[in-house]
Image (cartoon, rainbow, N blue to C red; front, side, top):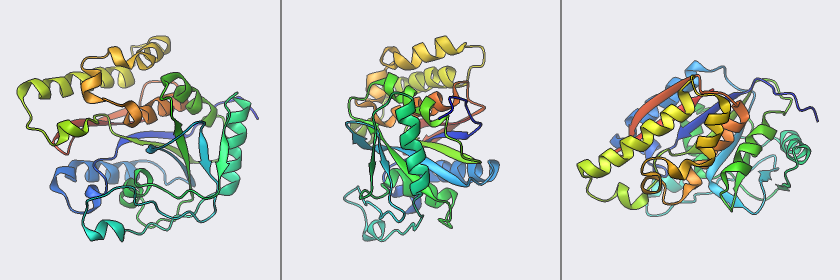
Length: 268
């Protein structure tokens, strides 16, 4: 496997609350419009690798079925949330290429022919590409949630030889479940905004050199109010994978109001 980096499109999105973006929830209008904008802005990909916040394994694990099912991995929503269809095909040859790229990068990984697509994949892609005509492969996070392995995972994905591929990190730049349902104060709003400013500077400031950018991402817990915004970091780490795949400042950053909180999306 070559260690050359290929010019894949890389995108980190804040995917919102469960299935609510496609159930007409008004607090997700900016997110829905942003996803539609992004799909119109970039060339339609021939295949998509999705790294979702909703899948963790001991080692990076790759969906390898040609026809994955959907996992309705949420609860307490209207019945319509469990009737959502998104019949995207898998891509076993691409899954094998991912596995080989990770091995070549010194990362243990495994193929999984049983697991389906979770809502971190099918909710945003149903908005972006409703025809479900792009083959997709999901890659898990690593359970220990170490930033370095997720940057390395992205670096390995960048070496895959596949024309016009999208690497999609599906998470949420703010993910404190208690805070979503608690009354907001000027103090908590300030904490959310301070972390977002730090994150935007980290990802989008072209004056930062890559050594400094990596150091910030590795030490993200030292960012302002980091643990308020991410009591657990699984929704942030798909961003680390995206940075590893791109290894540069983002081309564009989009600031959004999602489910009552400030969030952001990054395109490379």
